[in-house]
Length: 328
Image: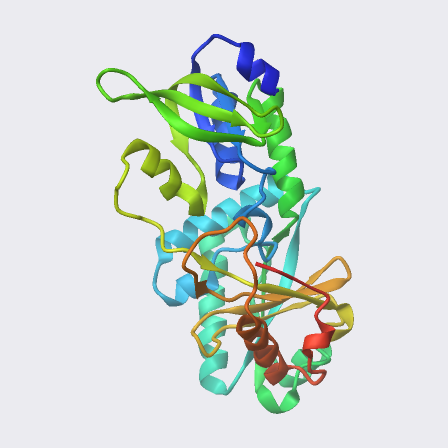
C-alpha cells in the first residue's frame, strides 16, 4: 500500500489523517460513494482511543438523564443498525441496574422504557423492573444490603478491534489505499493558502514523500491539535485530553450472563461491569491529563476508585491483586 501511495501521481479525492474508528469509517463511506481515498495512520490502526473501549454499543443512558433525547435517539438507531450489519462481531447484552428505594425503581423503569421507545423497531429488548429476589438470582454476587430491587434493560456489545479491521477491509475492497506507520508531518498548500495535500514520513522505510488531495480530513481524535498546528502554527488548543481506565477481572466476580450498570458513581459517572471473553471489564473513569498519549498510563488513584466502587456492590470484593490487566 505504501508503494502505491508513493508512485501514484493522481490527486486523491480524500486524504484522511488518522486510522482510528472515525478515519476508517470515513474511508469506507467515501470509497463506497466512488471517491478515491488515501488513509494514513502514524501507528497501528485503532492504536489509541478506538481500541480502549468498554466494548459497548450503547445509546447513552446517562445522556437520557441529561435530557439529550436527540443524541440518544440517534445513538440507539445507529446501535440497532450496527447489530444488523455486523452480527458476527456484535450481540445483545443484558444489563441490570441495582436500585436504592422506590424512587430509583420508578425513575429507571420509566426512563429505560422510554429508552426502548426511542429505538423503535430497532429496540433490543423490553426493559422491566426486577424484584429484589429476581435481581439476586440474576446477579448472584451483588450485595443484598445495597439494593432494593433492580431494572433490566438491553444494549449492544461489540468487538472493537475486529469491527475496525472488517471496516478497513471493506474500504480497501472498494478501492481505498490505506497505510499505517505513515505519519503526516506537514500540509501542502497552494499560493492562496489552500491545503492541497500532505507531507508523509514512512516510519519503516525512513523516507518522506508527498500526496496530493482535494480534501484533507483531520480524523486524529485526541491528536487533532497537532494537525491544526500544521495548518495554523500557534493556534489555540481545542482539545482538553482526558483518559478513561478499564480493569480486567476474572469472571468469578460476575457469574452469569448479565452486566451491571452502576448509574451514578461518586464523580457522577456511570460504571459498567461487563462480561467479556470469560473475563469481566470494569470501567470507566474520566480523568483530565496534561498531554495526550498513544499509551496512556492508568493512575493508581483511578484503579482504586474503580475497585472501591465495585466493592460497594459486590459481596466478593475485588482487590488490587485481582486485576488481571489495565487499559486506558
